[in-house]
Image (cartoon, rainbow, N blue to C red; front, side, top):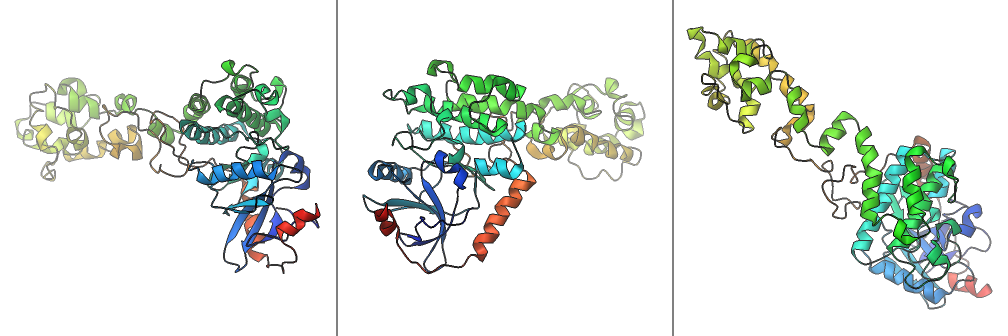
Length: 437
């Protein structure tokens, strides 16, 4: 967030400008002028954008109107378009946001590889949703990525189609630079996304391969291929590439939610032996319960049904009691609460927590252990980042990428400054300012 300059409009449509979003140093790589502004009544704060000086306002306005009609997760939601043919503008609801170059400045340099992957996965997710609707962004660049607490948003929609000066040259695919027909399609978006990933990981869009983290070299190199046929086949394919290493490195809790839980079954010390096999072999695995149930002690037979009450989960989860004759009655009796009378068998109860714990702790309530299919994204989907992706995607895209503390502090400072900002007295309108130029 930067102070207004003398040549900035003090008012755009009904909104009084408070500050510029982009730093002076980034002005040459942003294909529009972006301001933080507030309604005259002081109630609404918005991000309002106008064409850059010297651009064709009519072509810019066409793309602004197209953006308003879109409903794509991960794209800046344009809520209002106004002005005239000569002086158009559009506005979007304000949320604390930093352009990607400002994020790197706040962080103090390139971002960690895991953060880059998560950022790229979120951007690829938005592009996949747009491409599924037959729409290409055609304006992706580091400055077009706004990082917010709720995830990144893509702005500058259609900048390449409108022929606007500003997008980083390193983000223009060769076919776009040559002006080929249909150049601003999905393949161009994938090239630009590769350049954005390179920027986030190195600080510039055209790095040497040795500058990139080893885990990103092949992926970024594929996106930046000169021939569109050599780039990833789709944003969806790129999304899977970005997600896979993150899923492998995920903590056990997250991995349990992203991958099938079945392999965890054998890790349960006593449960499987007692629930699905003869009681004999299960003896060593369940010291107290199975031993008591498998012994010849007649009096303990009644206690048998109650004993398995502790590991009742598996029986309730739908597994047959197995061929173990004496244990067959135990299955149905598993839910029996009268476990109390089973004096000697009672110690078997504490063994029950071992089963669920080994099966993933909190994930146990997810249902059957053996038949558990991939759990898909962590519950909580349906946010603005969830454009109907396959459940097999390993990375949790419903949650925004974690932001470094210094970036969070910069976002908080922006919000605080806007809250403290007082509405200036409007001196000139946007139209009047543009006529001076």
